[in-house]
Amino acid sequence: MRKAERLNEIVHHLRRMHQAITAKTLAEAFEVSPRTIYRDIQDLINAGTPITGEAGVGYMIDKQYHLPPIMFDADEIEAIALGISMVSNWTDEAFAEKAKSAYCKIQATLTAPMIHELTQISTFSAPSRYKIPWEVNFTEVRECIRRKQFVSFNYLDLDKQATQRTIRPLALISFSPVWLLVGWCELRQDFRNFRLDRITDFTKSPQHFKDEKGKALADYLKHHNDCT
Image (cartoon, rainbow, N blue to C red; front, side):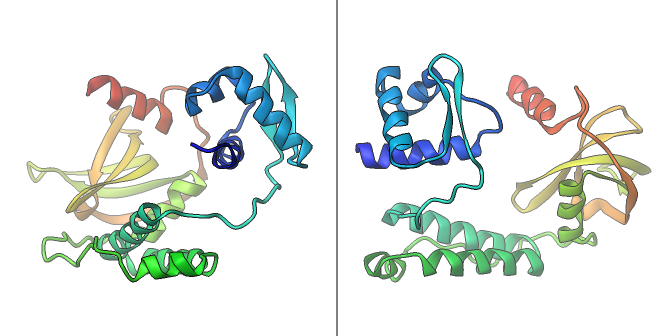
């Protein structure tokens, strides 16, 4: 990776972090020495990038800082286009419109050569007759996850047993053609996966929850990774 590309990626990396990150961690992420990171950080600071911190402690960047227009290579453009088409075909109309809107904004930042690359894309996602319909409002579910709102619904399991569930919705996961709603189930006092197509009478609660140790998405992902 060229230095200019690495400097740009370091800025992106720092913007994604919610706490200070050490030069050692950055060095491991970019496969360079900590000394190189020290020089890169100093070059960024000298160029006016609002990075604070020091060697051995960690670095943070002002989240209000905006980078110049992003440059993509041909593979990145194709990956983005494929992702947009998959969202369009496998979610709902509202989310598909958001994906298309984001793609239009990305297109507006592209150079002429990159616009040309769009016409050369050869990887696509097509609508599928295997898509399993669901009754629940996909966008409403996403909003409840984002706002950390308790939700309740009736659920029919694979044995045709119906139960009433109240959960902390944590994530939506696609196992094409099935979508799973991941949550902390108040009935079972454990993480559970619920197929969207088996959910009825979905109701969002006015009550909100806060992440608690052992009940958050990070805990679910850790448990899932430990089991795989």
